[in-house]
Structure formats: structure tokens, C-alpha cells
Image (cartoon, rainbow, N blue to C red; front, side):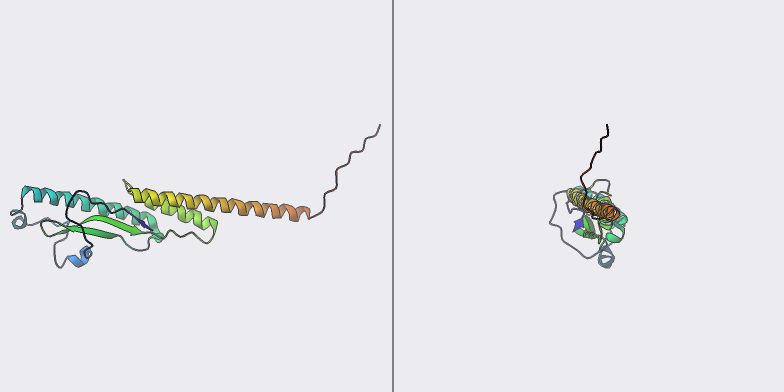
Length: 181
């Protein structure tokens, strides 16, 4: 299951998955680098505005996904993956992303409860969780509730077993009352 919705910030050309920024560095400058004066002097004011919007979205997406990763800990299956859009200046900007989280239950109810809490925290870690983030958090809450019910059932069975072993499986005699006058 993944955390982090992919939502473009404004109507623009269809985004595509590009190579990660580390690999794209050989073909274009990273988004964080300021464009040289010669590369932006030929751009229209609309194109410059779009570049500013893409830079802002890139920063927002990277912070959002980093919040998921930082909180997910060992449940993060991999690093963040991004969807990129190439700006009018030829630079690729992240416009969406996701972090894959292991949402499987644990081996015991206690372990499942701990995992569910971590999943919830990771899903809701960003300042502004997406709809997909909230959905994952709700599923984790449901998983925790089920694990708590299973744990309560196990504890009840264990307590019943202790009571039976303490008192044995004797048949109860009807109580009698002796009255003397």
C-alpha cells in the first residue's frame, strides 16, 4: 500500500515518470539550482510564473514524502518515488510522489497494534495529509481495533483457563442452608 497521493498542482502537460534527479542530473540541472540568466531571458512571463509554481510544488512534494519516510521507519519498503513534469526551462520538477509502506499485520496482536500505530503516524505525518494518506490512516486504525479485539479475546480465554485450573473442573454442589431454631 502506498502513502502519498499524486496530484498535480495546476493544469499542465501530462506528467510522466522520469528518471530520478540523481540520474537526470547528467541531462538537466536539478530543480533546486537557479537557472542561469541566459536560460530564463528568452522565457515569457507566463513560463517564468509556471517555473515558480513548479519549484514550489517540487519543494512541497519532497517535504511531504520525506515526512512519511521519517515517520515510517522500518515499515518503509523503499524510498520515495516521484512523478516529474518538465518545466519550460527543461528542468524536471516533482509534482507528485508516494512512499510504499508495509501494511501487513504483525505476528501477534501486540505487534499488529504497534505496526498499526506506526502506519497511522506515517500516513498523517505531513502537515497536510492527502485523501490517500487519510485512507491509509483509517485502514491502520481498523487494523489496530481488530488486533485489540483479538488481544482482549486471548486475555479473556487465558483468565478463564487460570480460573478453571485454580478451582479445578469440579462440579458445583448446590448451596445448602442449615437453619437451627
